[in-house]
Amino acid sequence: MKRIAVLASGSGSNLQAIMDAIERRDITNAEVAVVISDRKNAYALERARQKSIPVKHQSSKNYQSREDYDRDLVTYLTEQQIDLVVLAGFMRLMTPHFVAAYPNRILNIHPSLLPAFPGAHGVRDALAYGVKVAGCTVHFVDEGMDTGPIILQEAVPVYDSDTEESLQERIHELEHRLYPRAIELWVQDKIKIQGRRCFIDD
Ligand code: GRF
Image (tube, rainbow, N blue to C red; front, side, top):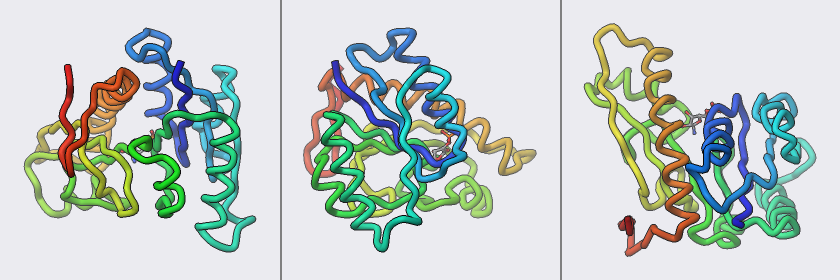
């Protein structure tokens, strides 16, 4: 049984999709062992509590630097014997120490077709740029901002009538299908990495 830690700062709809996929057995031999947030009021924590999953709030206010924050986080995750770290709207950049502690064992989901529109406002930036196709990306995490090897990526159309909210909603639906699939692939050890390229052994 692989032990997953989900890190989230916000609403946690991706966390919900992951927990639901585990219940449906779309993700097998894995459990969400803990949900961690840097924000006390993140709804993600509430979603975890509703499923009786342990939660941890680790505020950045108590730390001088990102390194100190990540060092404590790694210590905690090691104690918890976590196999896979899943970032689901966690609004912090991971430090080299964190990335080195979990090589190829940290996943992130980003609401754009990377390498286009990295950063905190992927959907807004894509819409403002005027793209006709948007999408989302699941990738391994390295020290960069949304730069690690891409595992899965899928597109959605952008309509003339779209607002940031409507496009966000379409992308979210896609995320909720794509992230559980990527996690299942990781758990089943079906992702082979060569350089920047991930090959799926399906
Ligand atoms: C998602 O759009 C994800 O791509 C981005 O943060 C958002 C998190 O949404 N990294 P939620 O908290 O899972 O609803």
